[in-house]
Length: 226
Image (tube, rainbow, N blue to C red; front, side, top):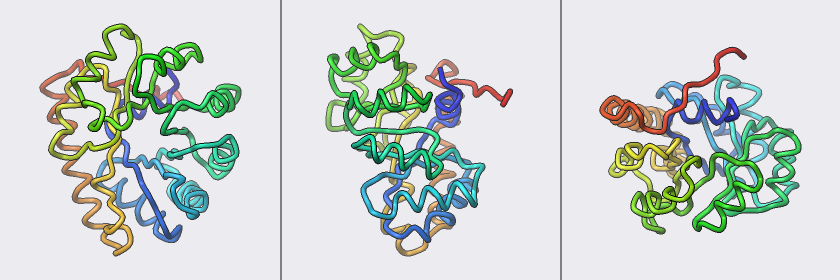
């Protein structure tokens, strides 16, 4: 498994960020890091995404930075040039997956069916994004999907909150969860970065407490050799 994916597994949670003003990117990244979660998936849902990634990469390099909602090869290329270290797609795009694979860029494509998981395996991927997780049956569906695909790890995203985070983390095939409740649009727009830090700390307590009870939860130890 790629070291970046191992780092995501060690953290257990990936903030999925929609940002409208690139000027908010750096204080947001610092708020997440202060809350014990030095990672951010900046989604290409707004025109500010590329600049936001560039700003964070330049000013808060300790944050593990990814680009989400990547729909095209052009977006993937722009994201990587801006400083993204991993790519996340909402669905399975062979074009984007191939682009990333050829450049050794970690990618977690969105899947919701056995067919898509099998496509991911054919592209030598070990980790996929289960999306939208809650709408497609949550942990119950994950357990069913995992049965024939025992080597695959999942990053469920969509409908995950502080209320159900532990349920997902408990399932050993979950590498990490994607969530946006701690980085809601309104909090970012209003500059409530202290609140983002508070919510992030609360979320990380849930992850830590859950893993303490279940040591074999889908955690990966990051490679610290550099």
